[in-house]
Amino acid sequence: DHRIARVQQGGRTVAVSFGGTGIELAGACASVGDLVSAYASVLDRYAVTTMDLDLGARSLDDPAAGDRRAQAVAQLQANRRAGGTQLAVWLTLPAGRGGLSTDGLRSVRQLQQAGVRLSGINAMTGHDDAPEGGQPRGAAAIAAITAMHDQLGRLYDELNVDLPVGGVWAIMGATPTIGRVEGEDRAFTLDDAATLNA
Image (cartoon, rainbow, N blue to C red; front, top):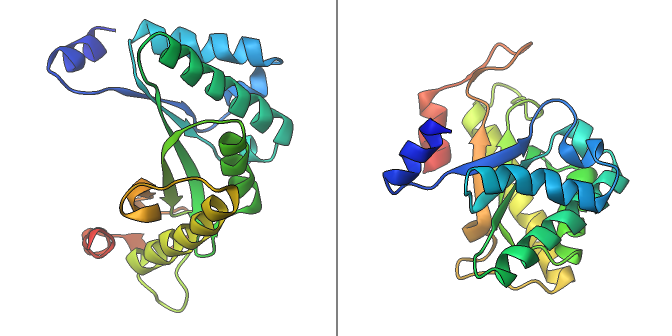
């Protein structure tokens, strides 16, 4: 509590990320109401206005939980708007050389169709984008985010969702797995980071 308060007192923004490894709240809560309360208890405790949904394979392969998540986040945003504030929502999804998985795209679709205003979508590259034929990891990450860009462009067009100036690139982030990935010899290096950044 004290560390977050110090960061906020310094004028910086704190975001809370839900998910990662284990069972994400949407899979643990049986109802939309319970899920709204669970998310809100954390957001309210820390007076946070930005949340991230970090969804790995285990969270993405449950369509019913995805529907609960979408409805709950839409309700959270509506509640914040009614109270005169905003809730920024980011989505972090695994992306390989082919972009997002079918389950990842379904998650974006569920959130959009529920009325969630996504601030951005973050590509988590690394574990499933092993380089081909000696390709550096930076190039593999670029292939992943480029494929994801194209997928999101088609999906947003299909759903008739307006994009900001800059198009899909303006709502995308990238978080590569740095260093070595278990079972792989090639590492994501500082040179790879510079290549991806460029």
